[in-house]
Image (cartoon, rainbow, N blue to C red):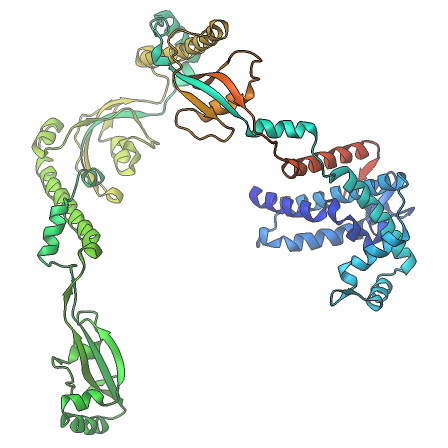
Length: 610
């Protein structure tokens, strides 16, 4: 829903913001939005008030309903209050801004000549007929909306004044010197040398040393971190179809041999073209058959009949064709009855079976042979597993079936990753059959079939723990690994800072070698330099003399040092006006709105439904 709101918000902003100020006043005037000087019930008449003047609730609701209707496809059939409130809030916010900018423009006493007003009137599309201004249409529309030419001209004069002021503030078309500097930075090329540095380059003896006291202290202070639900460890063997698929290959020679032997799928089957005559009764059908039977084959073939089309004679053939045995071109069937009608079938043409091009069928042959091999392997392995399943230990079952024996890590009742993610296995593993009195029974399961993967398992639970916090001995190795990793990260970060300081001081650092020069632009894509490094290269100020040095931490264990040796500027700066203008317009608009709002008293009515 948030995506819908963003789409609608963008649409509304485009339609409402200052670009349509003139249109807003053409048929409503300022009074259309504002109930100036009224003393009636404020909450009924106004949606909001600005410096004591009310924005008309009727005008607001009309515009809100229009825009809600225009964007109804984003709501669908659902009544979404957040969507409607967003639209209403956008409309009111822009009506407030429109009025404040109107007042601001009026206070500047800008001069709008009668000629300017006349030109603007003659440009309005609503007054045009066949592309030309029509005075009759102009007067009719004014009268229909309660305007005289003078009152309309005055309203339009105010709107033009407002538009000129906002255009001057927001749409000035020029490039500042700083914009040229930005262009030069955006298009310059910086020459650098890079050196990669990894945590593996360090002497990690100090970082990998964590005392028992540190490990115990971490456990004492963070024991709750290791809380776990009920869990088991298992041994298991599996006949797993995805693994068989992964290990199965079909050689090109096997595909070629299958094709050479002309087996299924390599031949285009024979097909036959048939025609038909239909009759309401048997007598008419028999009479026509007797006439055609006396004809030569060429005469019968030239007789007019309805085409049935080409068919391959197989189990999918139409019922009528399965009843006839026509082998000679031009031969006909005796009248055949079907659903109360009678038919005579004629064989028109035969296209013999022919071999398909190898390139056309080789993939389908490969897929067919691959599936055959997978199925054969799975069935053979399943037979071995079923035979071995009666043995007393998993070790013997694994040996007899030829399948590897696996040990699982801890598996939980709600599992997502281990072998316990299959409900069929999870159910058995945590059953009373496998766990009794908080201990594994040692029982070996029957074969457990996993239907969705065509896999089968035999499991044995080897360890079990109730939900709770494990003992220190159970997690001390985990804690040690965690503390060592954190210490290495800290030591690595300090080492990187030390090396950068050496570079800046002496121009060299232990373990760093800068060999290959790389020209870098803002949008460079190069395997030799990380994209984070590109940004950092352009974030530093080049030294007036000599080289500049920097480093980018790629992650906790990798860094990329760079030496900036030179900067090449483009001969001419690009004009960034078009790129920068939209952001400047938005910034200026928001700034003006904030400034004008800060000086006005704005009241939103309590029943505004925003």
